[in-house]
Length: 388
Image (cartoon, rainbow, N blue to C red; front, side, top):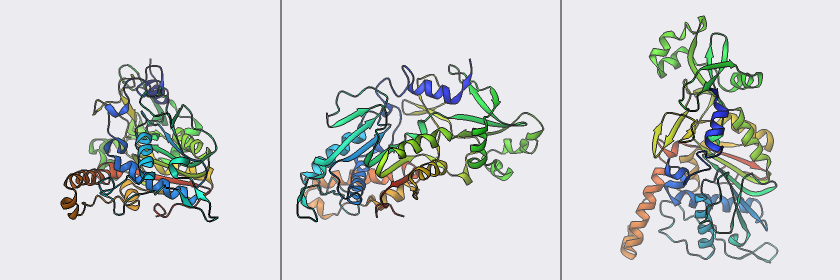
């Protein structure tokens, strides 16, 4: 029986035995910035330090990871915060960064002269994930199934929005219709006309492409494009991002003061993909998007639409840049460590070279560096490292 893609994705990814709630976790199937290198978390440590300062070093500083996988990012961040508080983060740990990343979280005096507790003493880590809590996580990391309310601090959503289930539509002679899918075989019959709400979203955020744009994407489709309105399908597909707008707006609404950051594959209104981006991943390989629970099913994010929804809740401007630009603003430039380190610490120099190489992967615009970073402040100014 064929159903709408949004329902099929929800069942395949988050239902009983679904891809994200069963098994060993997404790291076995695809590679994200979190899995690529601890340098990603090291740069986020600098961002966390900037948010902490913008908030006036609150007694409790929350770090919430939405779509936490198996807790890999928070586990690395927690270890970095502890090490940094103890002064154990050295040159080999911050290689590839233009300036050593350090929250310098040791006790210091506030403007009143009182001793301020360290960052490690004030930070609280929360993972938001539907999968069961992994056994290896330390008790300092809380594990919940819903985004908590009244957050003061940093909310991170790394490749979360691309897995928020959504509907797919195809343009036909009588307008936009839902694309249905057979969860077992992946066949895609055409369903009913889209709802008024979804039509409004498509009209605003997913414009019809020009014939030239279609030709650049697929000459075979372009040859029939001008006849598409006479009957049948045009072949032009769209992924209706309204559920993702709502999910991001809800996440931002949970922040009392702080910063929300979404990192994801994405596209903008003027360059929407003609045939959509829906695909699957399993065992490190890209596979057809069959929503049977055996593989990841994902689609790139309409980041400008998501950003607009979040800004409407936060009532302040957002920033949207590539990951390459965002990480470089946080000091990650992929530069080689100083040659002098080879003479004083050969093993450290080798480690530093490896870290620098990993940073280069994170900032490569042809790969992970092409991700988009959406930064939405709530009740604070954008930290100087991201206000670009």
